[in-house]
Image (cartoon, rainbow, N blue to C red):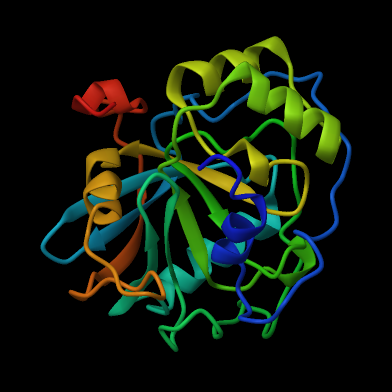
Length: 248
């Protein structure tokens, strides 16, 4: 993933149009703890993405931080919006992207119609398993499309580069998480709304990320979302980390 700043950003965007850079960046001065790897409380609302032939991806959301982003996703799920849509863009070592009724990266809308601003918090970063909205480089262009990070190894030198070039500042905790688990830190900084985290099924995400794709990063064999359901967390085992699945 090194030296792919522009190519990577264009891979995540919602609209297939040229952009000047990767959208508006906000200075990320992290003073609060990173919350990606915190477990939900029993009874909290979670979402489950049921992927045909692959299995289930269970995710906790963070409505206390990003209420609009979470409401949009859960209400779309309850409406059956995501049923029988595909993961239309898959890049190994980066992310898997879905939620577009057109299936080509140009469609989708929020529960309010059109685009909305899902917001941003520096307490959620792009570590493996992070759930975020795909957009055209600014959180005000969030819609229905989403991606889940797989990511790759991240070095201290790379984090220093992002700090220098993009005004993204990392706490020691964030640096340690990226060093240990990898991710896509070049997407931090305020352009993309991270609003959830995989709590089980990261192996499913990684398996999808390894599927063969065409020149547009679309899987050659359809990866179908049967449905997305909204459930209550029952206190069952949490598996956040790649190592929990024997993944590197």
